[in-house]
Image (cartoon, rainbow, N blue to C red; front, side, top):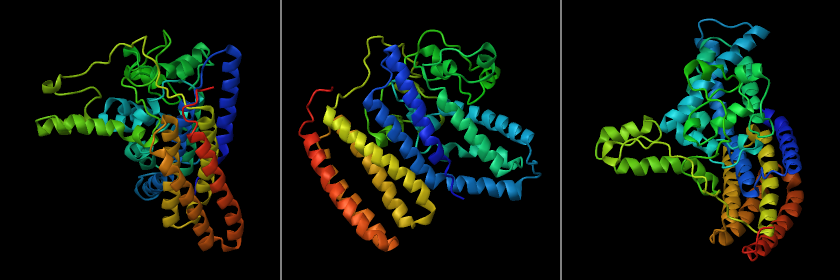
Length: 410
């Protein structure tokens, strides 16, 4: 069964982001930057379209284990749900912790930490492959016989809870909440690159796991956000791949095969003695500026329009995913990913985008019309009447925005 829950929570996410923006404006705080926010949201869209191909297999495996391999089955009661939520959050703690302490997993999870801002849009900046790599960690849940529906509800609540803690608007919660739950204060620490904040506060809903296993750190001074070596790119594909490329480059410099294997499972920062040994987390440079590219007003408007279309396209893709052929699943998947690449390239003012964007607009129109020809022939005329003028309109808009690419940011 297709999971449509994301379609219902997206408006809730945007409503809260809008409230946070109003709060920041009232406090005269620079909380959101256009380039960073659009990239965060595009990364979230990419996460959802990847999950369409990944989650089905994971959920199928969980159902099979729960129904056929579990030695006993948990009853469908409220206390079973509470127990499942606690177990899920406990396993999430270890999945999250290993995502920081093992290179192989950090290469995926690093995506969530790349933003140099801290706001609700950062919560949506998620890896495209982390669920695939870390899904096995949650296998004890179906083995213990929890019903898949209860497991899904526990996972959903744990995930949605973590959205609201990505904010500066809430300084501190009541003492009992700060002791028991993961709060904005605790999670700001988690996103900090200050040496004392690195690899701390891994809990999802509950902070008690960090207190029990020695990874808790209270918030003291305001953290500096991001990763120790800034990404300096708005390219979503590179954001998901860069750490693995860096691992490969380091491994090629190692003379011993054992070291090349070790780097996969070593802690981030580990290097053999021949390359200088372990690289400690550097102190924060107070003079270091955040990465920015200052696109012009017309470029920002064009990218914003493309994002709105991307969001609508992703929601339609989720809704119709199970009902279309694998060929068009792949076609529309590639269309969404290429559109995000174009947005990043425009924000970075890449010269090659002038050639690729016209091609993308044409291919999107072709893909939509061939899809309607084979699947919804009665609506083909409507799609032709809408898509061709839209492609021409966006081509003209892009041309005007591109030739004003050096316009100063407003």
